[in-house]
Length: 470
Ligand SMILES: [Mn+2]
Image (tube, rainbow, N blue to C red):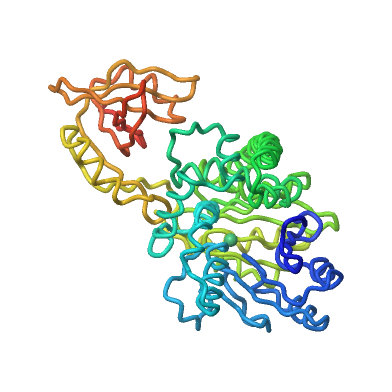
């Protein structure tokens, strides 16, 4: 590790070989390198055995985690996890990396180091906030706000290279959505398909050439990930359609296919939920025949509790209300599938089973001014639990609808007797093209965004939904 403190190094377990959480291989490696302390980030809260094992080798642990603890806490030197029932820390929703940031803040305080020195790291923190899908409220919103400033103005070499490799031009100011959909998935792709080491090397590189090298590798792996992802999603959707025809599992989706890639199970689960709004578990088989799966929730349903009720059928499980991972024996699959279905059927509310578009306010197009938009922007950064405000305007006329690349919808809207128009764009809403072309008037549900077009900033409406009059 050239250029680092000789007594400091990082270790990222190989997910394929070592699984999730703290691995024994990691502890053995740390011992062989002569380390006496391991700081676990984003994992470890349930690794009681591993922390005991490390202690037997003279290695201490500091756990920085944000996952839900089990009944027993690991006997570590320190456990930082605001999700511990007894933890007095007021903000419970930090990202995994956010907890690491807190550790460093405390370290600075204790060692009389100016805390502002840490602000340089906020570009990393905001990426983690977005990639971890934690709510953008409270402390996360503050960290995200300053993190985005750092990221957009003076990003570290690695992130700068990755932003460029993701196709963003210099003028574009990235927001949380860009991090969730473009930057986060690229960083995660290498860990899913190969080894996360390359992502770490990218993020810590100080040198432009090296950073661009790693950004290129990561972008290529991401392309590969996208292909795998769409094939597996299609397979999963076909399986659901077949199950539904047989009247199976109306409340849940639990699918297993032995050749699905372990690294993309969570993505496939999320995609299935976009089509069928059900708590979803996607499983594959690992090398020793065990089933491993990723679970995702829909409509705010507490998935963790439902999985916990099946604990006796599982070898391992962990996670949050909205996302979890689990491992089971193949022979338990059918029993699990039935019990999970029954538990969800009892617990879930009707409205959690359908996509629900919440609307913040009904307005008229005349109210959408640049001043109005400037005020809206003060609510940013937007993200989970602090979403971009959604508006509805009724009785509009749509003009000159166009299909973009056969799947996106672009058109103009104006009030029924108004002369001014707004451009509206509906991503992935191609199927609305025909009805829109024939419609006399519509109600529109949308968010407002700015769009740079030929050097000028325009306000445009990003369509969430359209209501047609019969
Ligand atoms: Mn995490």
